[in-house]
Length: 313
Image (cartoon, rainbow, N blue to C red):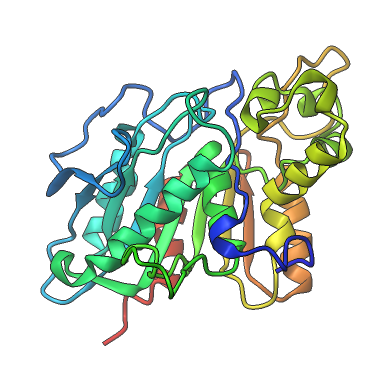
């Protein structure tokens, strides 16, 4: 973990998952719940809020299965667990991997870091019920696009959020992941860094201010800078962290001179920046673009097969 927030108590650590741009993200169904089968467990509550619910799709194996957790996108203002890609679900289940799709609280009802902590709790809840659900708690991965991608990276890179002294049995469970396979992920949420990495007006995404809960005169304040640093998944990267597969579909290269605010928020530069940092730590990081591969879902399923050790006896 970075020296940033190293002294912060994990249960109070700030969190963020980013905001979708106006451009749709490839490889996610456009119609809510399109072609999804009926889950084995539907709308199971993992927390007190009405959106603290999950669906579980079991792989149907005799022995405990790995689990892939799907975290939906939608700018943290919209979206739902029904955005789960049916092809990804089918590919995982055929390999003997169960899949859990979750909802979490949305803005403007809540602000940073509520969204992230909901998702972490869902992972802890699954581990608490691993025996009943026939899940191997040591083999848990995460996936998602945009906001869900950022969430996956933040949880994956962050030190374990488990609190062994909590009176809540859910919070005593681990949040650690084996790997993450993500779509259109942002490796940093610091507008200052986004401006440097992407250029144009990507750092002016219209939802950022509200997501951070900042007033207009606070955007360049010490308070804001602390939040920006806390929100960046890459700031928690350290040796021994999980491997990542990251797919991008936005056009490569510099943004146009007339780029709109927020344009470029799914740019591959987020991925190449992350790969440079991970390569230096000798952690596997695969960054792919739609110009290179037509079927990222197939590669993601293969990535899960490899890292969730499907040949384990």
